[in-house]
Structures are given as C-alpha cells and as structure tokens.
Amino acid sequence: MHIQGISLLALAEEFGTPLYVYDTQKMLEKLTLLKQSFQSQKLKIKYAAKALSNISVLGFFKKQDIGLDTVALEEIHLGLEAGFAPEDILFTPNCVSFEEIKEAVALGVVINIDNIAILEQFGHYYGSSVPCCIRINPHLVAGGNSKIQVGHIDSKFGISVLQMRHVLRVVKAHQIKVTGLHMHTGSDILEADIFLRGAEILFEAAMEFPDLQFLDFGSGFKVAYKSGDITTDIAELGEKIGKAFEDFCQQYGRSLEIWFEPGKYLVSEAGYFLVAVNTIKQTPATVFAGVNSGFNHLIRPMLYDAYHEIINISNPEGTPRLYSVVGYICETDTFGVDRKITEIREGDVLCMRNAGAYGFSMSSQYNSRLRPAEVLIYNGKAHLVRKRETMEDILKNQILIDYEKA
Ligand SMILES: *Cc1c(COP(=O)(O)O)cnc(C)c1O
Image (tube, rainbow, N blue to C red):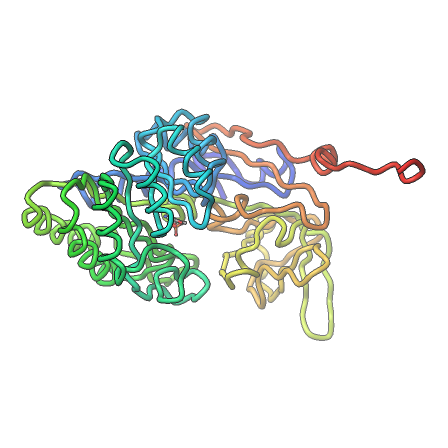
C-alpha cells in the first residue's frame, strides 16, 4: 500500500510501530468536494479540531484557508499556534465554566453558547459589546449509534428549540448581538433529508434574530468504514441544503454565510494506523493476532463498536484466514473479530484504515504505555509531526514522595 508514492511498510520500518500516518492529499480531496457542493453559497468550513488535533494537521487546514471549530480552550491555543486568526476560530464548548468563556473572548474567537444560564451571564457581562452564536438543539435523532447522537431530548448539548422564547427574552434584556445560529446533531447522520429537517428548524428560529451573519449546520457527515457502507452524499446535500438556504435568505432579507464543521469527514479516511504483530495465539475458539497496541491508541472499536478494516501489509499476497485482532492491554481490547486477513506471521505489520479521526486524539497512556508517533505525508514527502513518547513523558509530571522523610 502506497500513499502519495510512499510505501506504508517503508514508513513502519523508518519510524517504527505503532505509527499513525496521515495523507494530506485525501484531506484536500474531501475538502474540495465539500467546497464544490456548495459553490453557489457563501460557504465557510470550520475544521473540527478534536477529530485530529496535531498542530501540523491544523496548519495544513489553515493553509487551505478554512477556519477551525474548537471545544476547549486548549484547542483554541493550538489553533492560534498553528496560525489561525482568532476570528476564524469558533469555540463551541459544553459545560465549561464562564471563566473559560471569558478567556476565549479575550483571545478574540467566536463564542458559541449552548446554555441559557451562560447566555445570561454572557449578556450581563458583555451586553452588546461581544457578539455570539447560539447553539440550538433541534431534537433530531440522527444516526444509528446512540453514543454519538447529541440532538435527542436527553442530550446535554445545545439550547432546546423549545426554549427559544426564553432565549429571546435574555437576548433582548441584555441587547446581546447574536450573529450566528448553530446546530450539531452528532456523528453519522446518513441523509440529506435529516440535515434538511434540522435546517428548517434553524431557519424558523433565525427569523427572530435580525443581526445574523451565518447559520452553522455543524457536522455529522457519515464516512465509509467498510466497502458497501452508505455515506452522506455531499453533492446531494449541497443541492438540497443549498436550495433551501437560498429560499431562507430571500425570506430573511439578506444573504448569510453557511457554515459546516466537519471533523471525521475531512480526516478519517486520510489516516492509517500501523501496528506490528507480537504473537499469534491459537485457542480452542479462534486464532488471535496480538499486536503492539490497544485501546490506549485506538479506542473507537471498543468505545463505539467502530469497524476499522485491517490489512496485513507485510503479506498482501498470503492466503486469507480468519483472525481476531487484539491488543496488548490488560483489558478486552479487540480491534476486530473474525476478520479475513491474509496470513499473519509474527512481526508482520497490520494497517488499520480510517484511523485519522478520533484515533490519536483519543489516545491515552493507559497501562503506562507510550503513545505512538505521527507522520504526515505532504507533497509526496513524509514528515514526522509527533515524536513517539518515551519513558520521560510518562514520568514528566509525576512526583515520587520520599516516604522515609514524609
Ligand atoms: C465533534 C464535533 C464536530 C465534528 O464532528 P464529526 O462527526 O467529526 O464531523 C463538529 N461540531 C461540533 C460542535 C462537535 O462537537
């Protein structure tokens, strides 16, 4: 397997395993498709940093002239470090303190408010001097996996669309300048029609806010994890939402910007996770391939039952056999069950696909294991963008008490 002409196996040899590899060409391809699908609108894309927050990935998207969606003060700092202008960064936190919001305002980013209590504090503190965006929960149940649905009635995200009268009271009382309305109903929304239903709810709410500059439809584009998976048809989405948006703008009396915050869509397919096989273990039930990684490096299969295709890049021509691919963590950390993979031998390098989004960014030091290195391929060249951790990183902030003296 090659990326921009570079062999994945050669990268595993050069940089060692476990290793995350990212293909900027793929990111660009996705970005271009999204842009083309909304050509006739004033489109702004805010890359959702949490999907893959390596500073060189952020820098790559900065170079493509798009903005950033952040959910933590630390992500804002990373974005600024990567070169984003504060006004191109949207801050969409949930359940953070008002202190954190004040710090974000001081940094000059756009604030997205998802709680009436915070909106009141914001209005009380800033009045009309700092504009903001309001995150609405349209109560759409989107996507099949309940762990990544965030628009339902029990969700902690957003201000319920049923509370709009209260929102308007607060906005009026404090003369808050609301320049954007936002919704994000979670990952893995399949269809343009669900998006459209959410859009309609946002359009209706928007009529009450005269100062709007943009409507932000969040993300939730569904990505293919295995062949045959249904994905969001971006062109269809562009056509349907684009048309509805134009109709809305006419009714609103002004043309607004249309924003999206894709994370997974831009980086998932661009990522490859390379691991080495430590052992082959036959049990009465199955054949395990045990690799030098676990949910400390890629937690999606265990957390979300996510499917990641696994390929033996050391033996691509071997006879396919059935394997359960598991990690080395003392915990159930199964990457895949009953996978047909070309014969696996000790030392072979396996490649897990679609590992760009929520792979490294959700990794941990569980079992006091080191986090992997990250390599980014740009212009046909491999760049190390994060060094593999060392024992020093594990010990860095720990303090051993001197029990003889304490
Ligand atoms: C996580 C998140 C996104 C990105 O979601 P993806 O499924 O990765 O595209 C966008 N907006 C907000 C507010 C988020 O929390």
